[in-house]
Image (tube, rainbow, N blue to C red):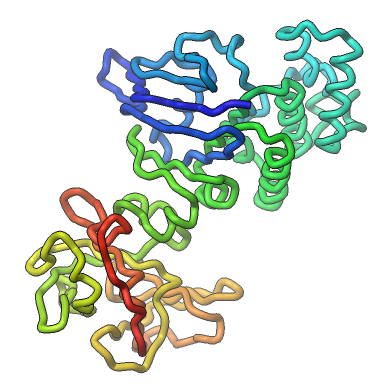
Amino acid sequence: MASITVQDLRKEYDAGSIVAVDDLSLEIADEEFVTVVGPSGCGKTTTLRMLAGLERATSGTIHIGDEDVTDVHAKNRDIAMVFQNYALYPHKTVFENMEFGLRMSTDLGPDERRERVRQAAEMMDIEELLADKPDELSGGQKQRVALGRAIVREPEVFLFDEPLSNLDAKLRTTMRTEIQRLQNKLGVTSVYVTHDQEEAMTMGDRIVILNDGKLQQVGRPKEVYENPVNEFVGGFIGSPSMNFIDVEASATDDGVQLSSVDGRFQYHLSSEYVQGLEQDLSGQRFTMGVRPENVYPTRSGSNKSFTATVEVLEPVGSDNYLHLDIADDFIARVDADVEPEDGDSIELTFDENHVHLFSPDTGVDVLSAEATRAAPAASD
């Protein structure tokens, strides 16, 4: 197996007028499973194709293990790739599809190739399908064949390009678990590209977030979720999305008051919470962020509570989503037994250690983990 090191990787099109990947640097450890996520056009598939050797980098380097593969042809890189559209030969049987790469790129004999295919088919539970052709298979079976074809190669690196996007929701969940199980068993370094943030969060040891070709944040899913470095990451990761309110900060005797521009929302940050910050927040404007599950009903009447009108109650099984009037798309995710009527006023609060303040100029969270902050839990 092998690590992957990407240094200052850049991909331009049309003589530099389009920058698909913008000076990306990334280190992936041996046997690590990394998911790459971002909106359409963010550069995630282009990055994967450069790792595979299917796209030539404009500049920068790619190392697999100790080998510089930046200019190495795709067929000479010890990688296996699983595609979104399965990429199976329709005129070949499942066995022939799985064996084809071995026959073309190794000097294994027929018996050895047959045994490798048999072992991979057994692992993927498709032994009884080896004589079938792709048009006789379901979407899930085709994906298992595509995975089996990658496994028989015994590569140093697995690359996955949105492999589950053509499957229905239930099958996606099943195959997600299958891929994780296989990666844990085989211990192959894996890079998994997806547009589905739930896949990215649940599958990866670490998650890589791209936007407009630029790296936004890398970290363990929980770390990225709880400590987004900027407004884009905060809004992109999580469902429902993080709530945002434009606020102005003003100094008080015992901390900082955050007030929305229209005056419908106020919240107090204690002096203990903000004393370690490098900058004075007073008089500045920010975009405040707080996740829906961190907003909850209270009867405290404190300077950390606020009153909002329920516009819509959306039941989603174990939880209710309360759509509130204090900002566009502001949602409180509450227990299912909290059931106010549409139009009711409700008092809510959240702990100040769940507050994010994003700079309107840079998008960076000034209350991020990089800042020194002593954050006592708020009490009702």
